[in-house]
Length: 243
Image 1 (tube, rainbow, N blue to C red):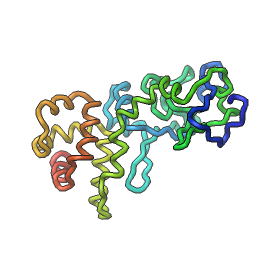
Image 2: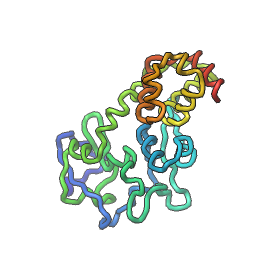
Image 3: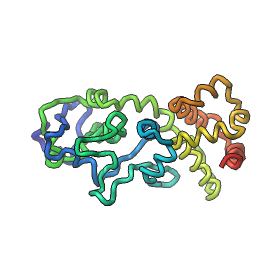
Image 4: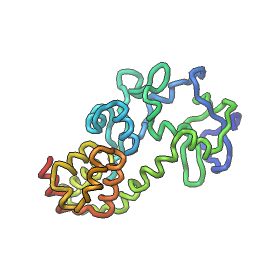
């Protein structure tokens, strides 16, 4: 595939492709600037822990929000004074490589319902002209992408399960709750443990202790609560109690 024109083409999932990214390429780090890097809940959890800051601090300092209807997307805030580059890219590569976002892991592949295409063409991304050959499954396994399916399975159900009211103030509150549960894990912990949440929603002591200090457990708990136990009136009262 490395000699084919791949721009705008969609390939079946079983078709192999060539790719390798390394410092010797003339385009090294070029893909880390002037681009939207979307962040998932699991991305934010891992990156904020890598940086040893709270999720609230990370969101305020490093991200921007894109709103589409009632859905909020989180993207990395690029450096406007330095070629709009990612705040974590260095001349040697990514400074948070071990917890790099899903968008960076899957690149240069762009997943489609009926196969895959490429985010860049091979005139820009020289790595697509390298000899290393992959199947799509091999690439996803190599880049640690498949764990996201497990960690964010419940998250993907939320948009179809949460009902909005068409009342602006109430819907803004619902969006705040979804945002907190999905992206601001440390704010969620405050909400759960500094209000009557545990009593109102009958959270067992064993589960409460599990989510008190474990971010990944709390993230899954938050998703389950939104999908199964969320109650608008109770939640609004608790929100006023804490925030």
